[in-house]
Image 1 (tube, rainbow, N blue to C red):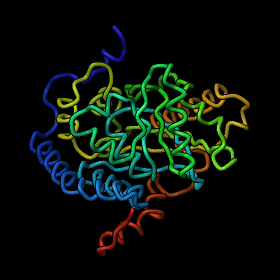
Image 2 (cartoon, rainbow, N blue to C red):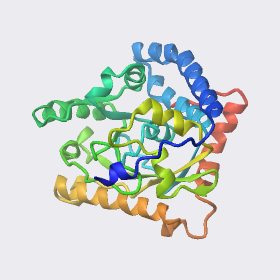
Image 3 (tube, rainbow, N blue to C red):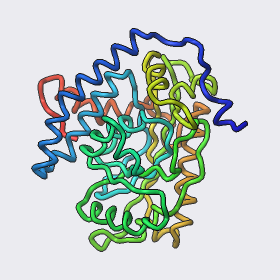
Image 4 (spheres, rainbow, N blue to C red):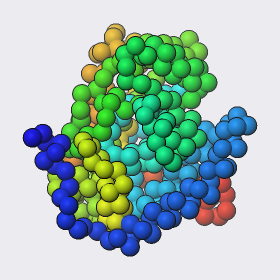
Length: 305
């Protein structure tokens, strides 16, 4: 039996059904109220269609009790291809509140009830895993990059148990061989770590309550996860790179995986990056970089994604 089965959360009761119900209702009401807004922005081709989801995901994280702590410096180049490990469906609002960009998603999601609407309104790029379609998808991704759209890629091809990183697949990273606007494409590895629940380390026993992998049923898993307390997730942005620095797509892929793995292991062990030593707690960047936006929201301002 694989670790992905052994580490699945037990079926015993954990968390509050009332909290699950409250969060599900708030998410549903908030999302349904805003779907028409984003639909209009997308249909009009408005630039705000790229910005609105950023604000939306920030509010979703608050509604669902998710605290995001950012580490490292995020790329300021547009476009940037963000290469991230994949742990859960919760990665979407978590990364969505940190990155103004669209996701590269597997084609099946385009047919999921409800979530397909969200993905399409986020202007996601849907790709099939068949190698025969890789060139078509690569061209579609290039067109988006030429429009200065940041894209978010999960190169593992599936979600993990959150305790390790699965092997990165290099096929979609072939997009890094292109040069949008005749410039090398910026690629930034990003580590996502589900680290604490109500301020206490998750550990291997509790992390599968949030990590969604294997043959777990999504509705049951989400109901259980949303009934728990306040989740802390560490998102670490690693040094941006380009393909030119490594000479080949496979070498770039290996570098990205190594950087993401190092960030995950560092966060799981409670260590901080060397350049974070002596600084404020991990969420200090959020406090300094995002507090102004949040204050503007509280004052009635609108923060665009």
